[in-house]
Length: 515
Image 1 (cartoon, rainbow, N blue to C red):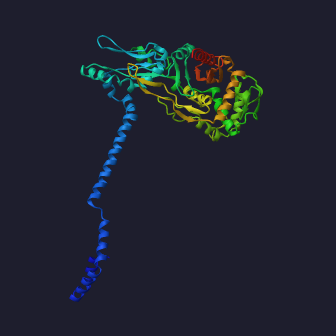
Image 2: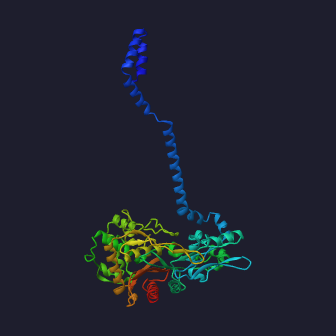
Image 3: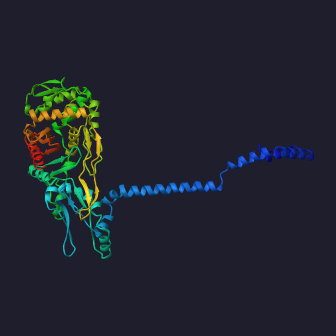
């Protein structure tokens, strides 16, 4: 208790001099105690100096946070914002910089800006239609790498003195070049192998995620994009020439989906391959739903390995029926269906319809890759890459490095793991089954001593009235310590073994013969 309070209370109780004298004596007697108490109480009050320091710390923290966000924006967000088609600042960059080149993995020019004597700039694509979708175009908007790397191509890391000189003279600086992962020989092989068919082809390195080739047909010539734009957009023929079918084409996967159904079976049966048996009579009927084998083939008494190798529809419809539907759906979720893939370019999500509420028809159709299931060739290639890479999916990418116009390295990109979608054991079992499809099944045309191939074919029905189907193949090949993955779809061509498999053979031969 403070003496001031004690004194006031005393004053209220007595006004006599004797009481005042007693109060004074009490104050003198306990002066040291009261003084020490008052000192401690006063010390608990924040001083003006401490308040000032607190405010200073707050301002410093806010400043550091602002600086951190500025660095983050410049390093991470600014390319995304500048690359936006809604950002008018792109026009400012193009007024000061000659757009850089797009190069193959061996530095062949895939796109460049040619400048005439009067200063007119023309974007030139020396390989015309061959790289149309993956390299893209830069007039009438942008697509492909022209869009994804727009900020990089309109940025100059030419020597500093040269940039200063050009700026003072009002001349443009040369933009940086983008070195892609694309292999010219593989791209040409894929393009020519597709011929006049519509479809899509992607070739990847499973260990790195590098995309070596990407072909979509029908195509267009990016050199004439401005003059042909109206007809391409009008699309009177319904060919969707501007659509990149590798990343945005969604198709019923047909029997290639049996990879996913097999994985679901393995997970629900402790990876037991040997216990499963089925007597195939050419068809299976359940609850008035009938599934036929391709061409009504009768496969007889078969195990899981033979079911996979021969691509037996009846057997896989039966597998679908014995699976727990909820767990089947979880397997699909783990393989990234109906999910974002976190890729450095735009794409369409794959989808599958299977749940606890699915009826017999939906279960049987889903198990063989029909029904409501839709996949992009890109997604199928990622799943196949995981099998070739012990369960890990590396993030697919197209840009390997950036250099200035003189060839000096500015930035180099490296492979990144996207996720693990299956265990190493699961990947090993699926790899053995895909090998059986080559040695004794529907992909036997890939049997050769040049490389070791693994795969799964598919014939995906899309017009039941006319009996039309897409031809699928997804798989990989190994030789000399190297591995490449390819996924192929040929629209309306029929069986996978007849059309897609020979294309895969050409790609594997080109890669391993000319590596």
